[in-house]
Image 1 (tube, rainbow, N blue to C red):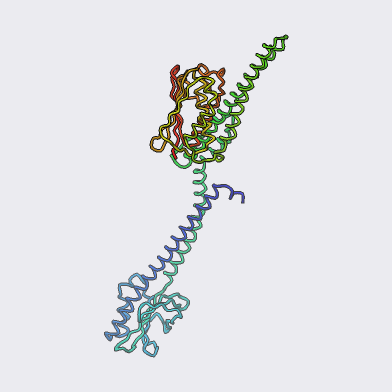
Image 2: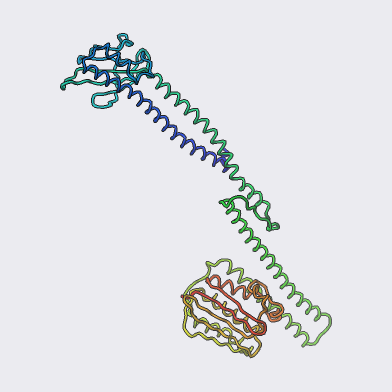
Length: 465
């Protein structure tokens, strides 16, 4: 039964089952409709014959004259007169008249009489092995039973027609079943051909060939939508692999640069004996690189550990005024060290709904970044205001700014605008990437506007509570 594992054969089987079911219903309807129609036609002939005999009896015609009238009946012009039978019984059940072709025989009653109306019955008797269709009517005069009239006709043609139709239906059903299986298989094969193409192409796509795409052909149907969906998934995978490769390259570059600097400093220090001040200078240089590497590793671990599962975020209501008070306390030493004025302008209290630790880290990173690239004696402003259902928070500095060509990339990991925000200023290129992730998990947006030598403005929009 391995073929049942093939979707082509499963579709074919279901197609055939539905087709033969519909064909069976149609065949049954045709058979019973045809049988009823033919029987009704024969019965109408017998009813006219019964009516004629009853009329003749009421008029007092002789039995021979009755037979002459029957033979001239238009209904029987298409019927062999030798196959028309009739008999008349009196109230005692004795046959008092009959057609000559009965030769003294009797049309017997059946146990299964079908009542046509109050005084008329029909049934299917036999005469010398010949099937008949018979109909009987009781003639009542002055509320007294007088005669019983029975007419019959040879029923071989009706039986033959019905039997032939049944045989044709059976043969055609088997024939159509075979045709439906073949046609169902061909249609399924043709319909699922694009899926096989998708499978073959997908099997050729690996991590080194993510540039390949599935063919998009034919009408805009479900299979084309499937190809587009898979191509979209491959696009995302390619972007992810590219980011991973770039990330690996950036990490390797950062580690190599710091290790090269430390190795160079230590090699120079070990070449010859040096003074205490020179050794301290070497140790300070190595310490600076160690601090840089520690900061980078800490941020990298935080990103990889926390951004992988947003379900770990603990959301609650956060007081905006208290949040920025804690941020300022955290940055107080840096503010005093660089002699930068930090102005926080929050005219109206506001409430945020989110993770307090992440929101605090968000604004600490943004303000630290502003401090880092603002010269001593400069200013950094924090402005917060509410517009409808959003809280707008602006971090504005009058520092060195960012060139226009660098703005689209500053939220990428390890990206630094080398001409204005160099490694010498202590940036790892991870802070803004972390900020963007925090804003997005809180269903907000972050925008940057900046001009070289004029300063930078970062706008964070977060849903208000």
